[in-house]
Length: 437
Image (cartoon, rainbow, N blue to C red; front, side, top):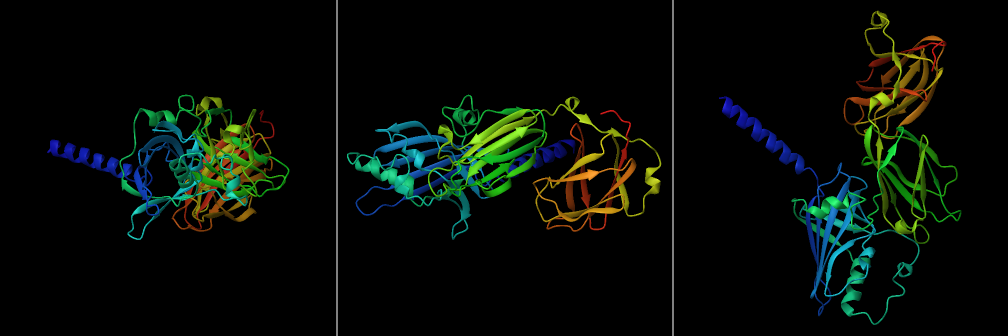
């Protein structure tokens, strides 16, 4: 009996692992054959995608064949949203025979879009970068010599302009010693748009854009940990600035170029500031010029001993003062009169909203709970303060879920709430005017 039970547990565990492995729609092998006009050879393309890091960073391998030409390239794909994978600017040639394309693989740029064909089978279609400038002005195209072999011209034009559509052949992820190196900036054979890991002193940051003064309608998207937090921002808008809140531990932040504006390339520059740590993601840098994305790992030290927290208020009997529909979720002591509430949805942006009262007065009504934190300044009165959080709806996925972080610049306290409409979550904050910060 015990043996059968253990066997059942093992099989169930194996089945669950197998199901998890199959949930990644991108990993596996994709193929296509490009049928040319009569008299010309077929161009074959095979794309292999490796298992991802955090469902965001995907090492990839590309095989290109035409006549006697065979080449294999390695590069990086980064998930932009549930359907798109951004394609790294650089592709490292593992080999090219009997000749080299001399970096013409750079023209396979933009992103792969996941969809289904008429038979319901998965396909990846190329989405090329949009620009108002004529394609012929792209760097490296105008100076192409007329004396190049015809096959080079054909492959060049295929990578630059063809409607590439790859069908999924299997879901077996690509993996070898090279796939792991692609995800290590210090070990990868070339720069794939993945910056060295940056260690930060705080989770709270500030972002803004700067760049050339000439308005050229560049658009960018920013993702954090696989979620879009800023979508198609026109970076030349004046005084664009926003707060950003990272998760404890490892974060992956990516700046995507959505277009090349009115002229090549995108020239957006994202400035980030976390405490005393400042850095930029800059498409005007030579190595990132005309790139689809720049991505970076950001690490916030999860060692709680290095953070300061609010003192818990251990006064007894507070629960007895609550109404039947009220629930006390926390009670803290603050030595700061003004606090910042950061409110967001850690699960999924599904239309949840909440209303907040402080000391029986409305602070905000119908506040949408998004993936991007909303920051609200709260002024306390001396002594006891009651903060009431009430769910307005259930969104599209019950229950109403929200995360709250209380911040005073040095101290913080994190709460997670799951509610149904009408639930009243209470946080007690005692403002001690004599407390030393």
